[in-house]
Image 1 (cartoon, rainbow, N blue to C red):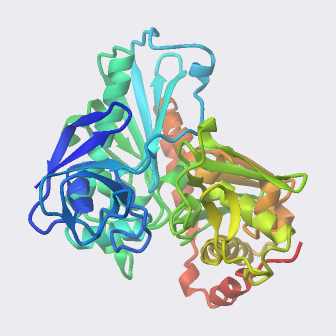
Image 2: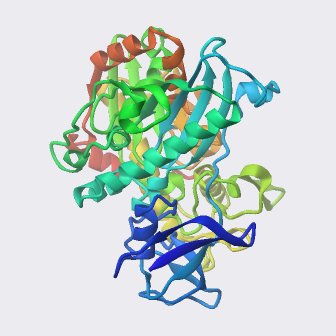
Length: 501
């Protein structure tokens, strides 16, 4: 059966369509054909985020509601169908490039251009770099199209276990080509000299069409961790050369190494911690000549998944909430009408709920609040959302405390704390402490850094000493296995609670 997409902004079909095999769901057909559609639960019919609107045709497996809305993971076409997205969540707004802010535009001529890309589980971000002047010319960011296979790393690995590695590769490969082709066309480039790629270990495996299944069970064995350099033609990518940054372990990847190298952490002379908050929270603590690392499986709540009204950091996401004289006030990314709440907005909301006594120290609603905590029209947090936040924040906070304990330190002993990842653009430091995500001792020491993984990938293009820095970081690293730490489960249970304000 043929599936056609309706472009509501133009009132017609998009140029692309796809075919669904017999008994194949709409979600599976779209993902296999390279179309982007969120399914944080991996297509299990739990999250309700893969909603589409049926324009024409008939389906079975999920009955459309009065507005024609259905779940793509449950629907199988019975005829040719035309569908439309419930809302557009494609473009992610986070950083404005320095060159764009300076007024440089497509008329800029470059003799040698490079590109850096960070393949995040949720978001793919890229920057175009003038290799002669070291200027960042343009920035592009959008949601990772692999999200159709689930919101977190383990969902992608499990998809690979079931034989979906090639499909996952095709999605990221097509997306990378599109980004680079956009740069080439916009700036009339002859070619991209070098593409540097950063990301967690699973994303880098899928970028090279390498099966990550070995990381899905003990002993969590990746196929490779070392840096890789190959011709772009091997991947069909419009770049002369491709460099993949090296990682430390299955769950401490090139993204954290890239960020640590960008900070030049080994030469900082400080006791410093880097926390990359995402579906897999990666934490590194530098003390003297030692670098302690761990990964904390926070889950996708900070990326908007598993939250009833949650979405990623896309246009229309509520990213800041505050109490304005007894009335809630919020902002959205791109100043667009609110579509849902992203991670930073979730942290603000939890902090406000605690301050107002809306929830108690255990996370339960204190009064009759069956309608939830209303933020905007149609956007409310319910008790289950608070629980999901507690699970995520406890994983991060427990990782921080266990890492400090293994290094013989207290949180108060840390000189500076760098926050990276998707939350690194909008997070309110005080609210992060109030909500129990970060220790109170970190206040006054926190630097919000944005996408350090991408910044490191850019530096890799410009500095021949960058990769040697990465190698030294890996040599100095000691990986702490939180699951094997006898104190972790007790710490996790304790840190689920909120401390009264």
